[in-house]
View (spheres, rainbow, N blue to C red):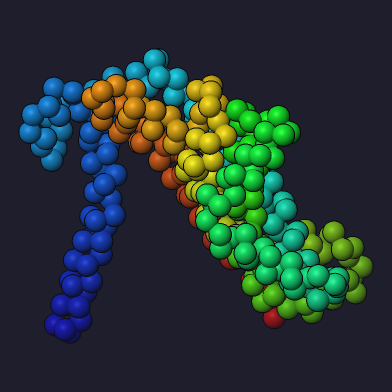
Length: 278
């Protein structure tokens, strides 16, 4: 009994230590964002001695951070919807044996190659293509670049989910008179909902934090996303206002946290609704 109690205490201490390591940077970021500037000039205490929201007000009043949030929302959710629509259908076709075409296996490895290469490898060809089309200095190139990176991830992540789904489930649905579309939307998608939720979280986080393509394809501050706006905050003045940067960092974390909470709930519901009953 004493050994079990000691083990529980050690586990509790370990969990508390891991939570402290994981959450302390967020606490410190929030602490810098709400401190007075003169407090940061001296010795910084662990607990803020002052409380101010002037940095948050300045972000929206003078730095145009609201525009950056709207731009990030548009590029992130737009690329996420397109990536999921393309990736889910492609993964399903590549995973199912009844869809036969000559270059199916080479296409699968080509998708993997696109994902293995670093994103910066595509900057020059994408820049040339977007320049010829005439869409540079808009939000569309960033959206399309995020689609290029996220679609291979979605395909390779979901192929295993579709392959693990017994084809007998679909065959029984066909026997009951379900069409191909009804079988896919009402049978297959609910069963792979956990995988879709997980890959949606990964794709969202990549698109939300995308910086390289935004710097190269976007030159106007009116089209800047949050990562680029935060970088410009550090380059505006000779002395960086860390309070502004920290406030921007806090705001940038909020949508990701909300999306993860939403996707996590959807992941749990997908696990329960996708259970195969005997």
